[in-house]
Image (tube, rainbow, N blue to C red; front, side, top):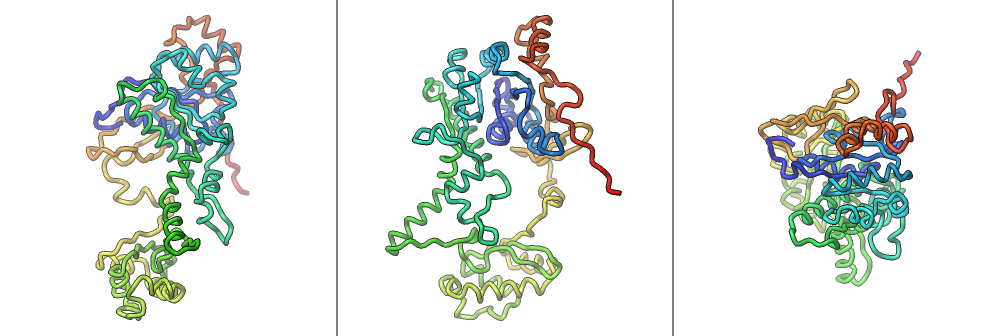
Length: 410
């Protein structure tokens, strides 16, 4: 964390995470100063092998500044190392399936038997209820909570691009951890935290669910307005003459008046389009008018006119240009991360205007800190060697999860 702001400095957090939800939660905690130890099985976190057999961007973005130990928790020796780690820690966060958590001995009961003062967080598919043992992934959460029904490509319900439900679940986990740490009277029940991907999705959909119920009760029938643009004509993405996309924020009648004036649209001042309710009735006509106005101008001209009119808008940025924006490059917004001889710029959780970012640790290789942590936990060299030779623990070996070479086209 930058600027010396490390409220969780000195606090050890154990992560048994795969994919995104738990690693994202612990990523935030590292940015708040916590020491995070990533515990992985010999097969590694799934994201270690997603790109040509090697680590994906998830490892680079969300596991920098962590330490890594590799343990086989199906062995008693591996579980004993884990118990020693638990005894030295304040928080354990995992997103294992319920059956796997019990099999590997990482449940709240298992961990609190070793460390009664622990905060234990299980990010799982569902919390209490008839599906408490069920499995869930990010796109299944989108499907189950209504989000996917409103996100269609060519009429087919489709998952979002980023795994927002995973990331929100991780963020909710952090909030619950901080709340438990702030309460000196928190008993074990309060420190046994479960965050469900399904329940996270329900909460995220609360506004839409309440809005649907409101309209149903007011109108006496079910009425849903599809589309992420809330069915407001002129609110959405439009292509410019030079094949760039601009996203317009046209929420109010005043916005509509400014838009039509700024783009010199024939509809400027037309009374039949002045009110939102009328524009909704003539949605196709209004959408066509906005589309024609935007596609008749180059992006720079659209930008200048909308800026002058004081309207909300932004170019729809392709990923390869996002970090080129001056706002993204302001002091303290990006962290320089080196990994395997490559250099990355990774956005910070809490940017520091002073720009004094602590470089932290690079993303760890699997088992990179296994030997150092075994020594710290009190294992003599011969005991550590026995753990490594038995396979109960594993240290990083050059070539583990290497990216496959890129073949040059002939």
